[in-house]
Image 1 (cartoon, rainbow, N blue to C red):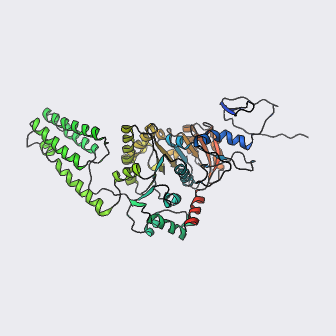
Image 2 (cartoon, rainbow, N blue to C red):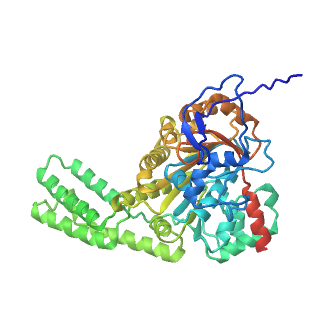
Length: 497
């Protein structure tokens, strides 16, 4: 009797080259299968070698066994494509390349997007010491999902809330938790531990607006445009502007940096000198403006008093925290306008500072959960939404040269800025029930639509992974089962309570 086995297969466009006892090689190409030729089945070790060997060598990790424990094994999950394998095959990623060349996580609600992202961040921080992470957490989920990192002292971390909290109970109430943990007293105890370690602060929104160096230059440009009919006024303003530009260059400050007392005193001196040199009328608006720059000191004093009275971190405080101390900074602010302003200011500041210093390390990963809020399609955006989208797009375009990476996580990929999407080199795709969302993924990342249709069968935690740079097989889609972040949360709750 005979038996026919019908197989549906998609080529991955690699040939496996075996040469005696030498290491197997994988070459780009496609050798057509020959009818009636012998077919061989890949072993577990060969599959693991194919997908992981290059990555493990770079990570300096040589596992004898594999485990879902993030602290012992940097794997992100197991390969799902070979169901007959009794022993699970782990999958590893080149974290450095994934961060530097950006990655995305796309799935519908309930697919485990936040769970996967928190586990990727956990492994990044544990196994890649030269990476820092700043999470823009508009849904306030990550203090819970990353509680083990916040509760331990090994990784310096900070949680920045929208409003001040005076006790652990207020902190507990401000964080979103999965339903099954909402009444779990163990969570309260761990949050009390985090609060007791003074890892909670809040964003100090400036009531007294302190101008930035960019604001000063904009103001000079406005004064100049209003004085175009008076050449000596223009010359005076150009002289002041040049002094400001020279000061910025000499002190290595960016447009988004707030001015300080030292600058204001120089600014006043430059204004008075230019007024005298170019004989500006004392009845003119330019004269009144240029000779009243010391009034800016009042703004500085009011802002400093607010900071001393109320505590918290302003923009400069957050930037200094990320640069000098914290490896994990979670900004949990639900007000869309406030958190988008923070994204604009911080992304511009870090990009400009890295350009000036020619620094690449430490790598800094900007994480945008609910990315449709931060990188919306430009055609339907205006105001702060459009500004934020453009700034994040610029960060993704230019950041890789300066060690600044980005992660976009969203359930509505169709609403995102496509120019920003095209900068991502690694992506995880979960269940996307809307055909248009799958079409966007297929067109943007050149994934076969037949493969994307398979994602409709995914259970929570199952993902299609593909990368141009961070996997062992370049641009080859892999079906994986991600490790569960709640297992790490449960371990922490059991250990610390």
